[in-house]
Length: 275
Length: 246
Ligand SMILES: Nc1ncnc2c1ncn2[C@@H]1O[C@H](COP(=O)(O)OP(=O)(O)OP(=O)(O)O)[C@@H](O)[C@H]1O
Ligand SMILES: [Mg+2]
Image 1 (spheres, each protein chain N blue to C red):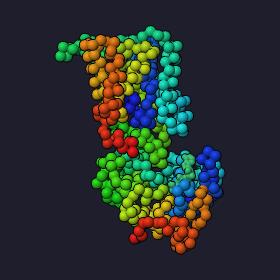
Image 2: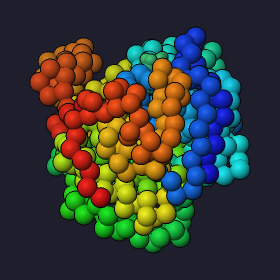
Image 3: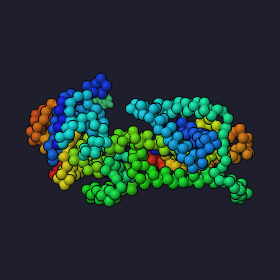
Image 4: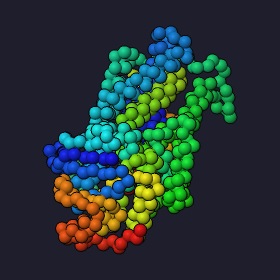
């Protein structure tokens, strides 16, 4: 989730507040193809990814692209909010308000590690997360296309002068982040259920994870995510589970106050970005 | 090589470039002089395709490129070193150069691009020592060299330079101008150099144009312009830089 924010931020400096909806699309889409259409797992997975990719593409083409000329970041960020509301409406129309789930990827006994019970699905989630980070790290730092994406966010005009087609790159970044978000949704739904309006909550947490770890850094986002998860469950355990969701916001404020570059974010990069 | 005819450019309702016509021959270094707000940057950005002209024609090597998209224009061999350098500050020096070769990067071309990068490093040895450094940590002069190197990585035939002396120490300006003359010869480039530093620019250029509030008001060989009374009064009097030694 946090990673998804970073992809779009990396290539456009836009914070996509509809990122949570991509995760929901992943979870609900997977349920639909798996349980309603009764496709086999791999096919359902691929179909869901395709749906999410198309959603990301449409979102970029229909809302972000027409605004790109105005170069008003705040406006674009607000537009992402309205897109998120729209997607939520469509999802509710299709799926109703009840939560959905499907069986874990693999059947089998949970593993007991240091007294904690870890289901196989959690291992899947962790594995997929790490795989995504490694792939995205390689993409942004080792491939020319990835670097071109970063270049677009640093200076779109200079990127155009390099012969980079900025509008294609922005579209690509929306598609990739939709896909990454959907994969996340597919993986977590067997654990935590998925309903049409889970997006904003996921978005806040993902955003928080991204900020805590340092915007633009995938490793940071994951670290931020874990930290957040741990603090959340401690709060739920020791204080009151009602405080759980507030914690994310508190941490967010705290980090923005004291370490705006994030825990992993280099001060240098932050400073250079502003210059 | 490049021929511009009656170019009109508007920003909304503002009439910025007014019937601009000019030409550049292969192998020439042509300079455009003009004070702040004269429309120099607008002209270069229109050639690069960032701004669409309202009327007029830009022809490059017998090809009408008026209104073409910037990525196509880079592909056919026109590259710009933009005003204010606009290097990618949070990427490394090497990544900046690599992005310069974006349009011709294909699998199997890696080696060729690596070689070109070495050529750039041999032209600007300072960049080589700092290849892994973030570009934003370079000095103004080094950033300008990086911007030039990055533009050269696209293997242009025509290089557009927008005020390369801006924000650079005077002795480094000299160094950069010497480099430009070298490039002109060694890479058989053609250059269009926009400058406010009139004296230095005319010293290295073959010909020049003077632009005032969007209109070309004067053109001629560098010698003619240097000895022209109007040019002397308007641009050379306050030219603070020492002479460029070639
Ligand atoms: N994006 C824009 N929108 C509206 N007007 C603009 C825009 N950019 C430039 N202008 C106007 O166009 C005119 C020409 O600007 P331009 O940047 O081309 O001048 P310049 O000769 O490059 O000046 P300088 O020496 O300061 O770089 C100026 O009057 C400027 O105010
Ligand atoms: Mg200018």
